[in-house]
Image 1: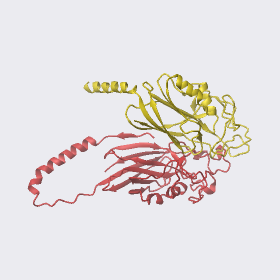
Image 2: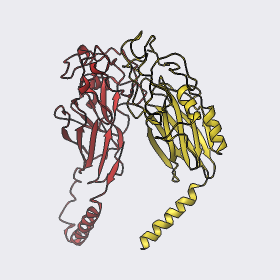
Image 3: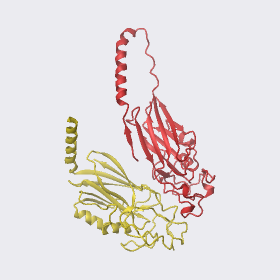
Image 4: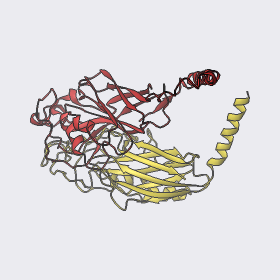
Length: 240
Length: 232
């Protein structure tokens, strides 16, 4: 993962803050008997997340973007949660967004087609979140997903951005049979979530799809559905 | 002008610090779902040597490791170069999604970190970290590793127990799903220099076909390993 932090507005902010505090000092002595101190306005911590689908023919299910202070959506080598299994096998992000670890969560509006982007805004009020995670299914697969895992937001100031690319993971909950009946994406229209776990039952990096063109005779996928890393480009900008 | 002087001074200070001994905690994680690593060898060494270089022929010591998982040759090579060595931290194979953590204290002048291990089942694939400059600043650093092909053996993908240098075939498929009776994917290794591995091909026939590998289990995409280095 390549991460670049761009500092752009810090100087401008410092200048404007300095001017504001100077004004307040000159007015406060005259006004103090008349004006009651107003309640502090709510503070928003807002992040604009732009996700670009870098694959050739793998639509991405509606992205789940979450702000959190602890836990992770997945851990390499550990079993998938049922929530992640749902996302990775069927593209349904509702259970991921409903998890107790989620301080603020936002779903993408729709599927992101190959080559397309979507910008999702997620906001938390009055608490500065420590981490951002996101996940989306590569829908023409059995249980592949891509995303960002517990990215630290500490030190990300308003106006600053983090950009990165992400690799793909295998939820480990469904064998990569690539059969039509098991893949929910448009190429197959097969089954999404199934609670049975018939694979290794731990999360690791995805090995890619094989496809009928590359030697898996029972696969519904073609060469067009193959993918390599990275699968997403992600740009996260703190706007408030 | 003044800024330039300060930067130069910092650079000089950094240079002098690099030659000092350091204590490292090193964690290697197998991030694949179906590939094992054979015993890992880690070395901190000076800039005059390397365990491997892409685009050049593998040493016989590297070939022993890449074809059969035998790290004794590389260990001797590192010892000769007065490197700091950590052999086999996982105590055998490192299974998919497993980690191993070990310590390495580096001597003055051993400023570069290298690490290799064979990938099973492959003919001569290995994970590799080549001469990573050990940072002078304390902290936690993460490096993702790619899979390399030693270029010393044709990737026939026939599991026949062969691990000695020069003998064709794959020693074993520890994660299972290894087949028998394959006719072989290829008998050629057109690029005999060390290169990025093109990945296992595999097939969907466990009792014949071209390959003894399972194309839904034994493939991978880069990266294949994560190394976390804590500089104390």
